[in-house]
Image (cartoon, rainbow, N blue to C red; front, side, top):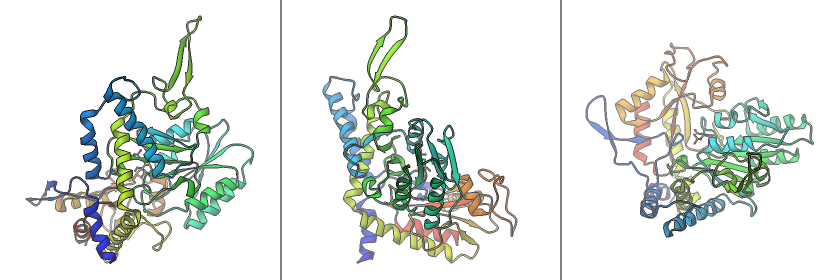
Length: 428
Ligand code: PMP
């Protein structure tokens, strides 16, 4: 029965691009195997159909009296509600549409109260690691188990002044190892020490349900293009108080409720208190609409079926990699850790960039190589030390030497068996 479910899901939730062919260096062509979902996932057919159906009715949002402007405004605001439902938001949470996870976390960084301390693990993606540079930020050592992560955070929080504001930023699923982080436990630890927590769900949301209330996190950030909705939109959802108290992320129309010219020649502004405060400029209605469409499609497909299917693909890939003695899979929490369909590895005697290029040129397989915008984590996993240069054009690792970068394969909804089978064969 499991096998039937696992086989049924890619057909129930098809993605675009399954028929695209690419040339091979050996001559001829092959259908493209998109195995880089962690960078950007292909669009769901359903998202594309919804966007195509809406496109003729496209109009300006919040800025027009015409029928199509009203329609677009409704779709945009309904998309906000759909996202709130998808994330299980509390009644007074705000959902702000942004450009991406990076944008969402930078927005939150600009909304920190004065004197806020920020705690991040060195294992974070740069989007979660870097926006806090203007705050008093503490970077925590990479933990080697979920339990150690909670203990490390608790120790760090216990050492701070308990009266000042503090924020913990943590990823739900690693973009390097795919491993799940103990979000609920980290949230409990943060709150027990009077801190707040933001969840970087860029890699979690496409693979697992994210319940802001159940996890008891204060904010969630994710990107549409990793959630099968590649139209330049992202989300920051959560507590309204810090967002309302902050200066608008961008100054401009839409964020301002009333603007007046002063006698002295200056300008006075009253800003909105709703999510519009941080959405100045004409909103990306197609981006927001496509995220809402993806949320609905994933929910309707059912998380149990999606997760069962992904577990089946993960097992296939891991078994295939384990059968090749030269392959080393990168892991922080060990082989048994629960994970999503994101797997990074190195191949002894191979430069990872050359390996990934060969997968493309000889097999039509698209993966990623490098340090995956998580330099400290990948260097820790490779054991190459903080100064190693490995993002692009890393030199060939001689036999017995450490690789300076890695290869990442990632997949999800709509990935057919054939893609992972071709990948496993190619690696072997
Ligand atoms: N966080 C994680 C865990 C990610 O994997 C990524 C994208 N690789 C980001 C944040 C940033 O997402 P975006 O590029 O859409 O802003």
